[in-house]
Image 1 (cartoon, one colour):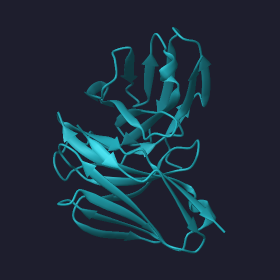
Image 2 (image 1 turned 120 degrees about the horizontal axis):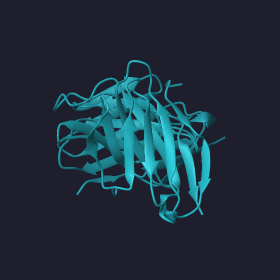
Image 3 (image 1 turned 90 degrees about the vertical axis):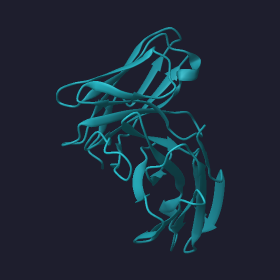
Image 4 (image 1 turned 45 degrees about the horizontal axis):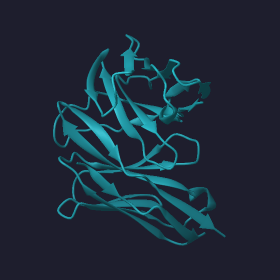
Length: 112
Length: 119
């Protein structure tokens, strides 16, 4: 089966740094996505990693280690608007197409 | 804004009824995927359409069906609604069939979703 684990909830202080971890065990791997989802809204794309290493994009960075089945999303200089759920998703290539398998999401609460 | 739109925003149905949800893909995208997201969970893959054909399906029963039209808009139909079908239904479009094999995938862009409540 496919298994993607991430913490259920995290809290952090405005201006701080937070790291959200994701571990996965999947049959097949074609990259890992991070999405941000505010309550009642659509997931919005944050980052994509397919090779090992760190991808930096402004205040957000994402890291991947394929050998360890591990990724993290790093959020710097936290703002109140960063309070949201963060979804880790693995892209699987099977049967001639790619599909996304999502973790349950990590609810991040940023407080003053 | 992703350019992906969905209608309706909210819908209330009773058990046993049928429902049709609609999605308009981002311009230039010919692939659409549908997901079901229960409260507090991540989205679950239902199926994917490319050029009006279903080219992949998740673990959902046949009463979940879909259509994709020549303009790449699509529909999700659910028959014989059950209480557990209450969820947020998301469609996501991407620019190609994402079938290029390993190290070839395309970002999926999500619409705002349809919140379905089954009573």
